[in-house]
Length: 247
Image 1 (cartoon, helix red, strand yellow):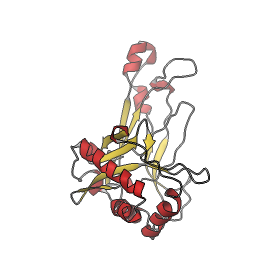
Image 2: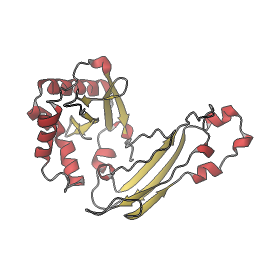
Image 3: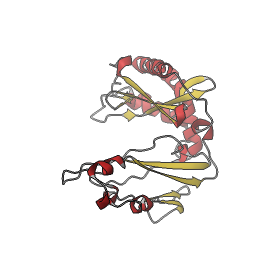
Image 4: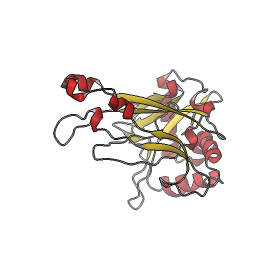
């Protein structure tokens, strides 16, 4: 969505997802689907004919039920035109494989809140090492359980979420303290990793970087309090010249 990955789905057995997009809105919006083949029960790779994609972008007002029959329709999502463009019986197995990944881009407009400054107009970060060093800084803050320092790094994300979801985040400072002081830190943060264990992946043409631990573990994760493990994804960007947590 506007260059940022908002969700990944393993659809081998069928999958459904509902995802709020407020913090990914930029006014003139672009949603890109990227489809990869899966191994079917028959032991062969899927073709475009095996894929069913149905969805919609809808606008809901505060307090609305977010069911499939509710909300104002902004855009429908399907890949019927992709499927109609090929004849599977006329293609070899290799040609079918070469069709993937399939991509399709949808566009829609939104009014009100916009994070174009983060997603489209933000400064591009070209130095991957800078992102890794920032991740080490965050790891050390977590290791010290330094709530005040972490809050300063988290501030841009909290500001954006307060703007995007004013009723859900009326007091971001309290929400932040409840999450980290009362839940995440007591659960035992996972901090036993080094630079070589950190992966940084660019999105939005390098304006935002996703940071996680190998092989694919959330950067912020604890061992769990009473079996309840906290996992928080980390996306960083440049704010007023400095790297900060933005998503």
